[in-house]
Image 1 (cartoon, helix red, strand yellow):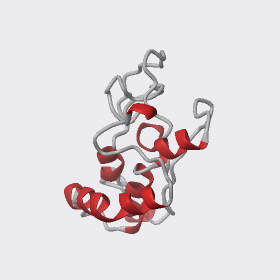
Image 2 (cartoon, rainbow, N blue to C red; image 1 turned 120 degrees about the vertical axis):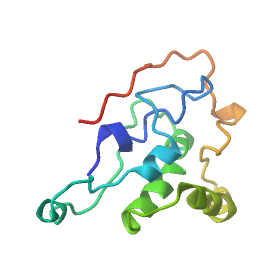
Image 3 (spheres, one colour; image 1 turned 90 degrees about the vertical axis):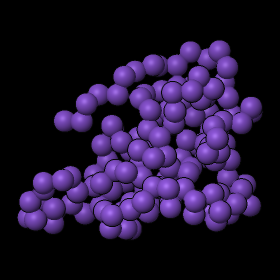
Image 4 (cartoon, helix red, strand yellow; image 1 turned 90 degrees about the horizontal axis):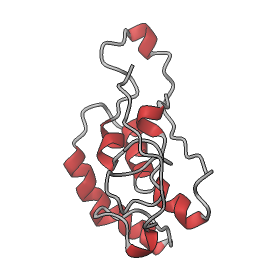
Length: 139
């Protein structure tokens, strides 16, 4: 499972104008964490055919490794927990664990992730026109 409406990590992370090169619709950290690969109401037989989930990150607009880091993390950590955990997950607990443990690990490894508070000054692209789009209804 990899719906564009949920798991394309090259899409913007917030509606904030400071987001670098806004492409696609908004996929927040919380949106990714709340994604459920097995849709509600799926029959047991159909659910058994779902093998997992993955995220896509198209690099046409990501011109360097630090931009890939920014686009992927920490949303990729959210997806990892989604596919490793039962559907009963608490987003605030995840964000607390992320802030206390995982983000410091990413920083120590030199990963230039998107801070929970928004892009840092050097992660912004002021004045760069993007592709503002409304998020389509899930179908």
